[in-house]
Image 1 (cartoon, rainbow, N blue to C red):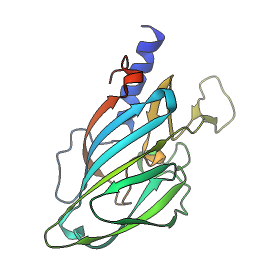
Image 2 (cartoon, rainbow, N blue to C red):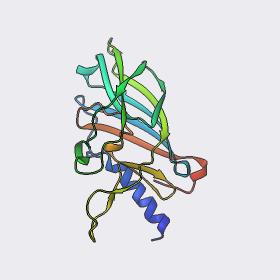
Image 3 (cartoon, one colour):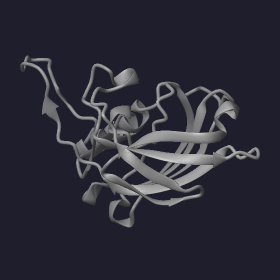
Length: 188
């Protein structure tokens, strides 16, 4: 297996590392993300369009989510506003023993009610947190990062906050990934 094949394989595994329940169907009690992702590994850049479906009980009133502060919202079907920086720095969920949580902004929005449960959100930016050794170097220790996109590969875990985090635990999702023309030889 060549280095590029290993990198591509790592990319496949890394994109899936964020999602603990690959086989879960969309559940009415979970936030569902329908993610369309475009990656440009040469410039460490990600562009995402996320159609978010909220659970029935959360489809009205004020809501909030965390998003990596290196990503900027470019469009939204419902107005969203930065409500401040997140004060959390500890990784969450399956990443609770891994890298620190990426610095993030807290966004707020108000669902209009009237049976509307979806928010379409587009955002983009660069994710590149260099891998760091978090403990003494032993022969089997390794460096950790919450997220990195570069020419050597792509790794995005939940702590990178590349998917809006409503701080509710489990989610359901579907995901499609494309690459920019500059990375046309990459595959998922």
